[in-house]
Length: 149
Image 1: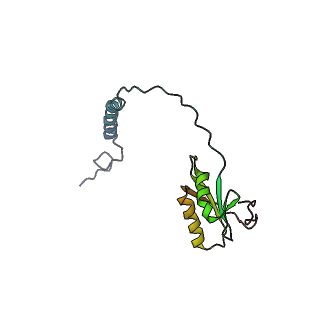
Image 2: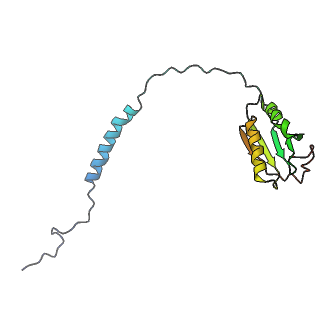
Image 3: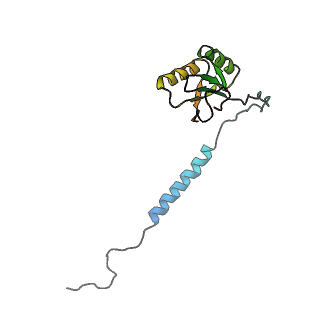
């Protein structure tokens, strides 16, 4: 029995066969060459000419800040109002504003019920959004009408 020792036999070959790879790449190239022009087709549309609009009226830059101090006094922009007049004055301050944002500050020692009632009072009288201010009211003299918010 003779054995073939030369490597010319039908053993395993480690050469890469790239013919199937080239076939797949060519097929994908043809598909993309056909598909791209179809994707670029569109419909003719007439766009209306650009119209210049007048500038919007300038908005007032002053902000509405409402405060509730430790004694239960209610303020609108550093002016103190009794609870009976507060709703009407806030409604009056909010008329004619495009943005119905009110900044809200309250003393940190107040019970939750009083603060929630004050927030409801603000919402019911024209404030769509309440922005909360986290300043210490006692440091700026919150009991006086001229105190800082």
